[in-house]
Length: 640
Image (cartoon, rainbow, N blue to C red; front, side, top):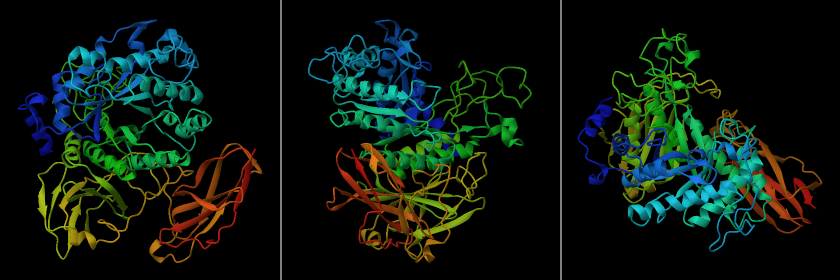
């Protein structure tokens, strides 16, 4: 708690951000709703975010609150938001969202299928304007023209080159009916229009596939469904499959964040695609602090999906580390303040006695900071505006990961602990993140790659650690049980114990002696397409004692397949599969490698008139390869 108190004290002495060259703006960390239309920018909100080291802000640009009558735009409120981000040096992830009632078409948008451009085409070109008969196209183009670097607002304000919005997100959580009920085909069209019109207005901008809730992608894989539709679009390759970035959201269960990132990367790979993956919402609401249901300590069923303040702080670090280790680029924590959440209300702190006497007696407490006095919701905390421990956790991430580039992520889940490593090549350092997965304190030891390291916790000053006989030894505090209801077998809590972060200057001689990585044997995240992200593959034999090679199989394919078809494979093995190498032979030609993946299915895009044969190899966690090294067809089909 001491670091959180220090942060609050520091705020009181900070001058505006422009006068603070030492303020961290972590390029791969963001916070949602630093400002938004419902929570207008003010200096205190910005200073709190800058104090923690945020590099990004994310908020929705609601169409229905700009175009209040057909053809009549009022940008004044959003001008203030964009100006606030630019003046304070924050980059913006703007969500193009919302629909005026007069442009409703069932769950979709009227005239969405109309051509993108005024010449009746969907082909961008010099001087082309949006089609006046396509209201979404008009709105997207107008928004980008106004807020891009060098756009209308930048010119009005005299901003330098590069100042403005460069990342545009096409809707929010289209896989949830709360936000979109128009279906996959209409969303694919919306995404295409967004891409074409954004790029027409600003070729340097990035377009993001709307951040997905990804509640159960085994039942509703919105990304795969949309990519299937785009795969049939003859313009897809010319326009980058209409996306530069994909995004996903993850709450409550820290490890799930890495699993959904990996799932998205594998889904893209099945279509031959590679895109940066962002986690642009991630967090957990607390129950043991106002406005959460503090009286439920003895009734866990009433605080499902919530955590303690200490667990919330651990989640900030662990979820982000899992995301980066799985290949994510930028990670956002939800959110700066509690604001109004999904159940707005305003009541004094209580112990349950108000429940039943008014519509709401508890609310969402996601905030890194508690609400200030005078807010419309949840404004009666005895310490208004003060930081929760999660604020200190975010600051630690920005302090350690936001001041230098990092790469080469590796993660090891031992039976009782997690150790993740990242390299910082520009500083010659590595960063380790460690936490306990059990309910008892434990000690971990691991090989040193330098002569000393600094160890950071979330609420205490850092200390210097010296290796003994070439190894570090650290005590890890225990985890505590939480109330996440969908944990895989063997998991005790959705959030590990308080994490430690270790920064070590590398000794090249010691690094060379670390095999196979600076951490230890790396066990990949054990999730594959076709397995629920809430499940974990469980080997029946410890890989250290597994000597039997895996035996692979391919599911039979139909004699005739469509242009895009699914190939599925599997393997029997005692200790668990590491990855597969899938081969394809086209029209009796030479065998070619198609996919190297831990996944168990892929979508192949064939050509009419060709025949295809597939074979699969596998390597298990012990390093045993399947014995079918002489390739022969295990499944065949043809496309007509």
